Amino acid sequence: MKKIGVIPNWHKNNTALVVDKMRTFFKQRSIPLKIVATDEADFYSSTSLAEQLSDLYDKLKLIIVVGGDGTILRVARDLACWSVPVLGINLGHKGFLAEIEVEQMERFLQYIATGQYDFQERMMLEAILQRGDEELGRYLALNDIVVARGPFSRNIKVDSFINNDFMESYSGDGIIISTPTGSTAYSLSAGGPIVNPVMELFLITPICPHSLYNRSVIVDGSDIISLKVESRQVQVVLTVDGQVLFALEDDDRITVSRPAQKVKLVCFHENSFYRLLHHKLKA
Image (cartoon, rainbow, N blue to C red; front, side, top):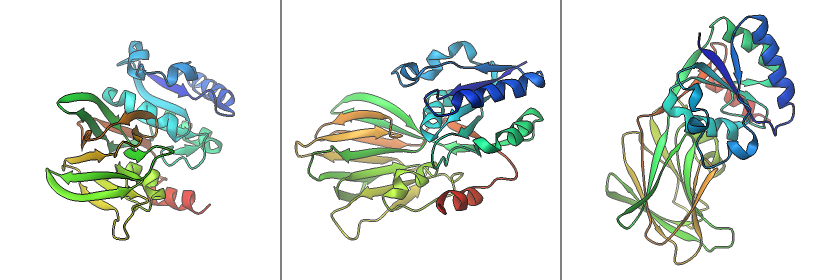
């Protein structure tokens, strides 16, 4: 029998209490549970969770993540290749990725125990970083990739291309390429639109542009986006889901496309994106 895996963020308040309650709940129903005791140092190490937890491959039918959006993002990126549904229990703040709040936990765990749940497939993005003819890295993201100036830098210039056609030259603090799931994250803070997360598209949102006409652009999920950095010898960084950081140089090129991998996020019939949106944004 496949197990339910639990990946907690042990540095969140009340994590131990929540995990103990889950352990008791599933034990009473004879449902096998595997608590992954990954500490913070291991969780945010350069070694992917897929490597750290390789002994669990093909042994889990569901992964429950106890934490905030940051915890869910790391699990989603690293374990997307496993194709296992992920349920988020929110111990953070807004928690747009988490399906349930901790005070709702027992009711929704009952749905899990009786199989009354479904999942949504969320598109991801893949960013390939190139410097000249050398490929420096490939990064999966569920929310976004961001090219932005460093903390003490002047404005930067990023040229954008869609399917090799020049689109716009953005001058300002940087640019965000986000998925629909990421539309409620950094892109929203930068003035981008909110998009239903099951759609297949990319959002291109400038950060503090030095032009009044620069606004978000929505492109098809099958399009290929290329970004060329002109840093003028100032600090420029690439971030992936706000967690992976890489220092960029002049003429570095980032190519963004839709990978084959998708993330399966558990959902329940009584919840909906629009109800969640109303609840999260009204505060």
